[in-house]
Image: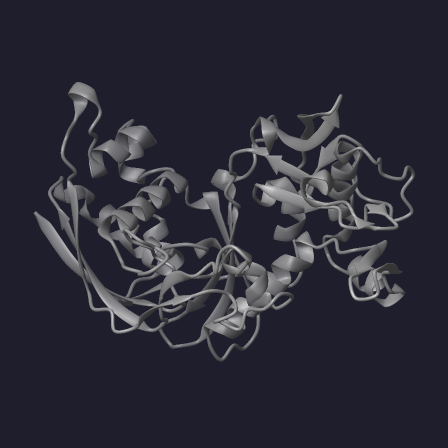
Length: 400
């Protein structure tokens, strides 16, 4: 049996819910086991076991056990967690000064309060230390790979809600490791591409804001027609300055294609040809490759009495018919603190989990036909051009 204790720290606030995530946050062993499984699958399993002909699934069962049928076996890897919470509280986006339009607010939109829900969740503050003990009951020849799995997660991973957007990031304090050497234990270390936005950051928040502004610039479209002024009860045109700012975003012409495809499904029809010159062709789309679901609300549709209401102006995008299902983003935003205390803004492209190009996306909209509301769905072909272009952004450099 091999054991080692890892000293770790949460370097960004963590929304890691337990039995009641709205009231209390807590670190839990099952959550960490789930993260270790994810990194094992993502990196293609261990190189040594791969050379012995073991598939990734077989390796996962070898490490973590299997409770299925007659083939059930106990996990060879046990985890023991030691932590003391001295600061856990219930928060929403407003409590964190993450208002609409702010970088943090862009990432924390699910925590924005509504009339029916204060949207609060339990949160553990940043800079909270904990320890994790690994106990390995498998072959000693595989112990270095098990240590590498824990080290990679502790350097690049996180815990809890919104971790793909920088929350719940962890840092490995001890033992100190060289990340490139740990990645070499895996069969496919190239399944992740680690890049960074160069800069000097005083803390996690500055790094997170840089990352979120960058990411938003690639997904951004913005209003280009008119908006409803509630106070004046009339339509007002979007100012030319705002239109120009929208056009200047990195992803505008890709987002414009997605806008037009949603408008077609909604039933109004996009202009053709479009003077904004969107990329791609009709029947194609780009932003689903960055994660689903997507909800488009065409607020400028309607008449003199105001915008269309609710679902009449909304298109739901999903990986399944009816706009249902989820597709986790293959782009991870990661505030990172190195052993010297310097902060980095990492962008991790998860090649292993990018959108399969042969798979369509479903655009769904509720329509009224013969006084009955029916769900109308159409498919679109997803292209990876936007995702690939993000990787080539000159603002990014290789992280070493």
